[in-house]
Length: 226
Image 1 (cartoon, rainbow, N blue to C red):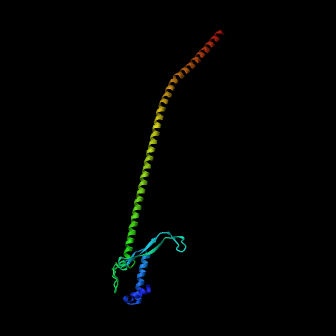
Image 2: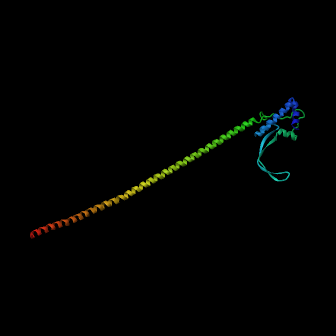
């Protein structure tokens, strides 16, 4: 049965060939559009249409037997419902007249799966929110770790600076202590040298006085002889 025959088969039930053709076109268009968009179109008791992704693979050319690489692609898939399977297998008998006994499809299942689309959109939003929250938590942890590391480095530097300052102060104190005995020794040596200098000065003055006395005596003697 082709499309034209299908239209003819349902024309009497829909009130004319044109109405049947429009109905068939509308149903097929809705199924194709929903499947291409990635939605699963399910007709209870009949089957479901869905989009399936096939990964890249290697296949063989049936004519030459050559191994050929097939690119990644997407294909439509139809899975028959249990009622359809039962009728085809003969588990259930197909009624002679009237319509096949198929359960009514849920509301919206033939219009592209609006409810499924809404659910997918909500799931995507929830996933995005979770990822954003996870990224924020990771960022906060990284910032906290960096701040802690910086604080530790600053504390280590401060401690090192304080230790250096203390060591310099100790060295200065030690040098001052060493310089004090040396100054005391210099002062003592100066005190010891002072008396010696006084003696030298006195000794120098004494011969000068004696020489002056001798000169005066020589003058008196000369005067008497005259």
